[in-house]
Image (cartoon, rainbow, N blue to C red; front, top):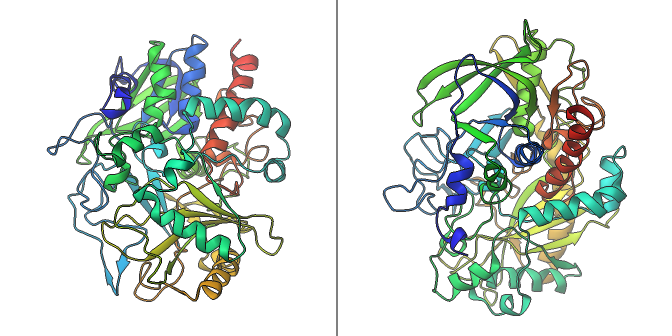
Length: 522
């Protein structure tokens, strides 16, 4: 518990490089990104005796700010919140007719809101990637749907070996339901459960990587508050088992992991001599100033920059001739996991509570509906005041897929996503929440996503795809034509998992790196 209650020695060990990368270095394995796929790769390679050098675009979140805490909360955001923005860009950024976004110092914050045409994508920035900024809902998808989205993968092996392995390493646990049933911080979830079930829908408890025993102490005021202090999308100071405390800590303990933070890879190409790959990168400081330009050589490169980061980089390398023979499928198959948010105004006798845990525990499972499958997270709205608002993040089965392409005029990779492509998600969610509203005599809140806007459909928490397994890569993430180049993150998954995706990303990475080590490295 003490390791979770403070910025821990584990965190420091995982984040502190034993040797900062320098121009001219040659390394056996370079991992680009420290999120779920990268963290799995780092652990399994180092355990196999292979030194790993990891580069991370974000910073090392192990030093407290002036308030004594590493992360800020959602109510009082500062420069630690957003990645180089002068104003916050909250998912629920309106309230009662006006914007509630706030001016902040531009800094290397922990949450990036990357804007494309018709879509904002939220991503983690820092050692631990998306694990720093998500709600921690550790959901294993239905096996039948996993087989549907990744038919080339042995689902039986995934569910018997790799999903259990991932859940164990991630530190997944479940809330004590007897405690939950009376805890003040979950009044909002009990209201969500009651109104859903009274309207004919099933709810289910969802495991999490937040330590629920620690949360009990928060509720009892015997430990510093984190989930109960509006901490989630800008990081949790206590209680959450993010990757820097699990996979990356274990990798660091081998003595074979080095992490260079605030490094952004700009080019990967075959080395002119000696084999391997030349990798160019830029090192910045927390203010965004360029500190150094570096060129190193890696025997093997693992792309783990996330669905957006990996897709953008590979599309750019193909278009600019650095990796010209990449498959045409690189950049294709991107999806938003069917994400859409919506809120309801409850009746006066259903208050949602002034104290709300920022960690969700419950979902509405309507995935079996053939007319539009929906898994809807009953989300917190931790404003510190009574709002009577029930907020939901719906995950739907949306068939539409975007494509990353390289724009020669701007020199940037862009995402082609049409605004109308979220309509199947809205339609599926609307069937559920129209029914709940009708049964409960309630209405939608239309003041949270715009001046008058019911659906939060222009942003994404769960980016997936862009380098789909078996299309852009072989069946284990190898990039055809380039021995020693691998994709090992959420870009391998074709746009949807039907649930919060990080457990699936982790388990698939476990499967793939096991095969790569066995067949390519030994």
